[in-house]
Image (cartoon, rainbow over all chains, first blue to last red; front, side, top):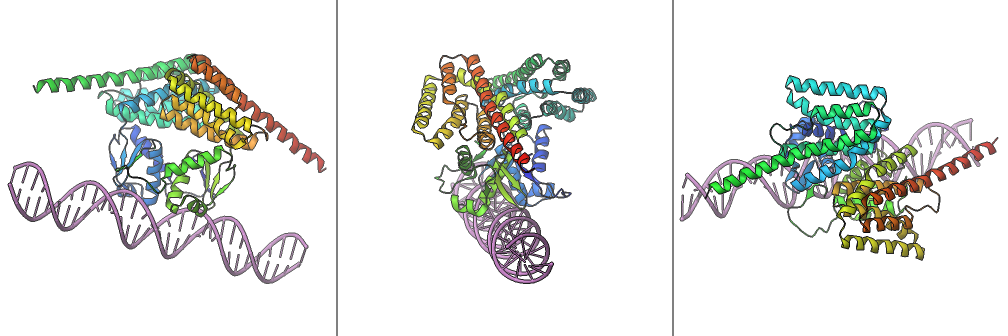
Length: 235
Length: 235
DNA sequence: CCGTATAAATTTGTCAACAAAAAAAATTTC
DNA sequence: GAAATTTTTTTTGTTGACAAATTTATACGG
């Protein structure tokens, strides 16, 4: 993956760019790094225990995936997607993930389904236990794991990027209680996959994505309404 | 695009990473840089007239898109996709491009259709004139332009990557006369888009992609047969 | 007290030098 | 003459230093 290989399979004590990028991806999915967060180079150097060059290269990779916003002479910030960009992300997800779902359904072994079921149980458990951070991460990761079953690394990479950006979007435009995904919709998806109904699974995915997006725009309308009240109140 | 912005809209005399990456993309699509070509840093520095750092960052971006293969302490090479990777690329294209096609059909203005028609004319002209290099580039670019009509930069970026990798695949596994695309299939696509038949356009795209892929595996079988003859001949 | 202007400190962007590894060339040996 | 070994050359990876820009802090004047 990433087209970078080492000649020796040596134990890599120092993190490489890919590892750093993945860590930041996860932190964004978990909402530990909200949109707009400054990522100063020296701070990241300390955090990961690597040189500045390594950090700069990682930030470039993140920027190329629209997770980070690189501003010249001003530094790196966690991206703050606009509403238009949010629409773009969901359009792309609707264009890609149903087919990923279809492929995954066709490819899935019983082991794959069992692992996904385990994951779903953890999702439910985290939800019941009130572990919000874990619940958020697992619900995002569900989509990534599903894409991994498809066995297509290109699609997996793209889904990972889109899920991460979705986490930023929900953080910006979602209501306080909004999660990445409702776990019961994931359950429906899993059953469709288990019985091998690829068309049904794809449909479920579309519905699921539309549902997430609708929650977002709903909360945005609410915010707009609040702003209007404030404006009128000043008169 | 790329999440990198400049504070000033200054005239940039020195090429940035994105520009260098794009130039290399185009050279790969045109088959000027075949699979396995060594990309030495100093040579690229001379070619683009930039410092080594800029080149190294560009190569990292290309590696993250699987266009370049970075081998530690050995340098950068234009990627040589395996057959499995080739299958993955076509699977991803079939998963993504029909929907890109659908969206583009819905979004397309008459101007968009006219520009695409112009492009198609150029494609035919290059073909008739025997300008092979131009014909190859234009046929690959058709898919990119189509994705641009969709107005979704995520999908466009992904399509660009997949088209570029396809060019490498055809260079490796395609017969000598194989082109990226047959222009008449592009014509069918365009008419479907013009009349707004998005489902038909999507179907045409699937058929088109399957056709390209089938040509590839055909030629691979031929190559295998040649190898077998050689092996038997040595006995 | 607040806004503006100046100065200090921090942060980013770039380059050059150096170390390590690999490739190429020359030498030796059979 | 060919294969193996050593030496030289080239190429890559990394570090540190420095310049440029921005941010923060400070001083000044209204």
